[in-house]
Image (cartoon, rainbow over the protein chains, first blue to last red):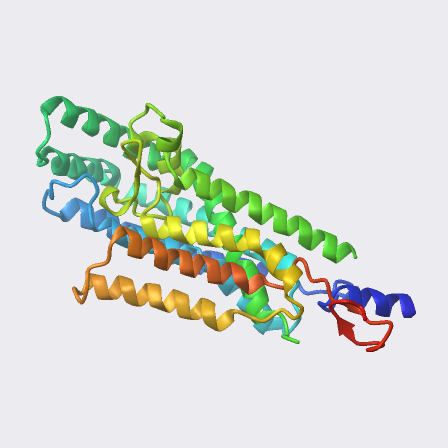
Length: 198
Length: 167
């Protein structure tokens, strides 16, 4: 008894790790993963078509890509939403590590949903990637640069966009980056929604 | 005890991950990579979280960094705050939640983005970097008292109460 009290004082946060039958977090992970995955996909789709339908700007990167960035940034907060949902659904204390785990898994879920929807969209509009590349190249051609340098940028950009849109590349880079960002927002969620301040 | 140890592990895991993202965010210029910058792995990896517009990014060795100045500030500020956590916890007896500061810093950044977008003012590389740093730092400081809390049970004057010194 004395020992357990001492442990509680050594560690200022209440330890509820021994709570029996702690509910599963997969429902929250799946809910946040699907919602944010769809939001991220729709925004990136809007961004892609905005690039396709824009006039050549003479700039290497199109300002409409801001929309795509918002998609990714929005996706970073999936971890927080998942933790909020978990805390609200079961009304329990959430340890920081659990919040981090829920966040990371949500980040992976968002990426997977986003990539699957992206692959499915290839059946609806198989030429979308090619159109984005062509639109970007048209924009580069409007730049006032020496021809050789322009050609180098065109080749590099086409290659970059092609590889960026491959499923393997998306999974390779998105899972760790989205996972880490959502892990952090999951921890923030655990700090805000899952703990009582003393 | 076991939970404290796992929190420390989590601290170092986040430290490693954020350091990695920050170093990647500096782009290929820091290593003087010869590949065209848009094709460098740093740009590929971070293209999902930042617009990477060259005119909104700092340049290093004639190459734009892999994230814009605001994102660099966010990661840099967060990393700095994270590194400061042990020091703050060491000198601070009672952890104080920085929730309001974090929300405020995020709102200031949003206001800056919107104000710039609608033409109320024009922000600069430096102002974006500073505001991003403020947001990153304040978010990291949400975790003051979480990983390195030294509070222990007093066995003397304040017997039974939690104090920083145990006295």
